Length: 399
Image 1 (cartoon, rainbow, N blue to C red):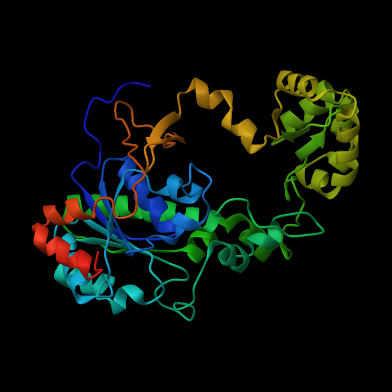
Image 2 (image 1 turned 90 degrees about the vertical axis):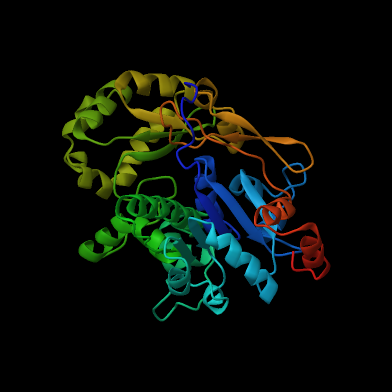
């Protein structure tokens, strides 16, 4: 990759975040990667509860390590008057405030979007909620798996016999991505118009957007797409088949040209192209069982490597079904220099992937994962607090 030739895009932007778990931390971590100063406010004594999800990364939580590099950790009791005074001083100098506190908590602390807009007209607020700040479910807690269920995603995922959750925190990730892009949009708007717009994203509505295709299919088709495991619910052939060596290989046929190539060059049966059972994409879905049986017979006679070679020659998209360990060793990641070391509390390092968006000539800042409260004293000193004041706040467990 080319070396950076200019400062980070968000250099000079300060973000203050009262965040926990996944959605908001994912948004602010991406802002930190682009050079923003992110000050993460954590509860004294415990901090972000994602710190304790597991201890698999040299004693640190895999979630916390993934989501919190490059941030400054400040412990602060926001339920105390003195803690809120510190927060006011932080926000006075901030560009963005991000929060995903429990429903109604930010407003009760005087940190709601409307109250902050009155006190800090240049401050962009970003609120990440479960089901929105208004409406009948505004005060319900929402975690990733609950939202997967509420949007219908779980009913689409799994086998015909049993539904399943998506294997990553997809509702949190969706909300975090929209909070990130919404904040960037608000920063651009403020830069071009001088107006600071509040941003709000809910987990439910973020994942609802991602449910667009099955929503349209269900509303206008009269039934929802079925659960079909690794098959595609509305395209065939599109799914995994087991080769003679026991390895699963996924193939994807997207158009009539590819269907003809699969029949003639891989299956060795060009007559299937004109078979009325398989004449169109809809016909192939309707006769999926017969189609799968024919493809499975061919795979059963081939080792997976040979099958993928023949599919490549026929121009058919294919992939082995990797484990996570195989993904970590993927040749594309190594060849494209995607891994970077990130320091952990205690002096060890973790290998982390570079952000997926490359800006030519601009590097990313993949800073250290902070220990709880590691930057409290430095941040307060920068706000003008003297040693005696900081010691007093610590003695009263405000920090």
